[in-house]
Image (cartoon, rainbow, N blue to C red; front, side):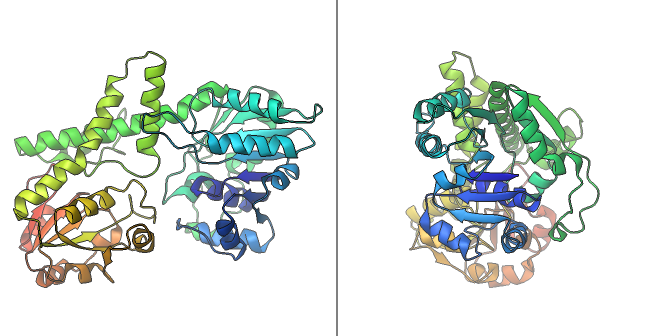
Length: 451
């Protein structure tokens, strides 16, 4: 099937490249000419595990093309996926400028009827407004637009696997034709009968994903409700961590036991610096705004947001109390991305800590396996090391801010010997307290007894 994907951000490119790998012909569209030029050169604008191999294979096979002309992309496609950004204003309201612009360009360019699929994370009733705009903007009375919702559940770092081996595919549709088209597009994933990319390490047989058919409003709500629930779980774990620190308990022991209950499960019960990134905090804020507009009490959501907001304050205070004076102290920062296996620093707790330490007068040296070029571009004064051992050299403290596997497997004895003071502040509970104690570190984590 010929598909256009409007928006070449993380969601758009993962969606477009994965659809192309399933045998569809995909045209990816973005207004950023520099990004399109980069893609035409066979280069990705960000890091995502396994995506580069899929990209080069599909691009070489001419199953992928790139353009800045959304009208051309929409005209030649049978189905158009909208993956443009819908950011939030400070009050939680959504900024629909990119979506409105895409609707206008599509409606005025096409001369045949199209299925428009909203894949961006949007508030409830967005598809209805989009359908209205398409009908208003079109200059051809013969053209009919069908609108559907297909929210994405792609996690940065595992987005390719999340797409090709999804646990569920959610389709919000209002007519049988849209349902049929989308089921045809996703048939290889639903049946797990595609040739699995060799990059996914052998790809053992997977259970086919659950197909969820709902109306459009339910689909839009499901996406926001899912993210809000995950945010609540993380904040709950962090509230437990604060209690554990007061009582001398170990939050990892507590959350592990809680997570063994099949009704709860252990994922997203990790205590630490809280959730960050470009999506989860914004999605939670937008969901809170929706409940406010609808007159629904959402105290638990607001509490989750407040707990998360305080994580950096509490961790910064912990470091300051231990070091006493931060001015002129050398701090090594391990990690800059908001999570492991991505180079995305947007909304990163690590970046917030960097700013706090720098403002307090500390000399910060940072290292991240993937995100240093992005960080230096955003913060030109940032000093980066060549590796973790480099930033540990003569440091008064090391802060683990991102849970990269590389940090877990460091030669921590060499790290200790390189430091001026062997103090480690583990904001991700990545390391073993007993092992760090054996290595004679001053070790501080979140919600666990200190060494």
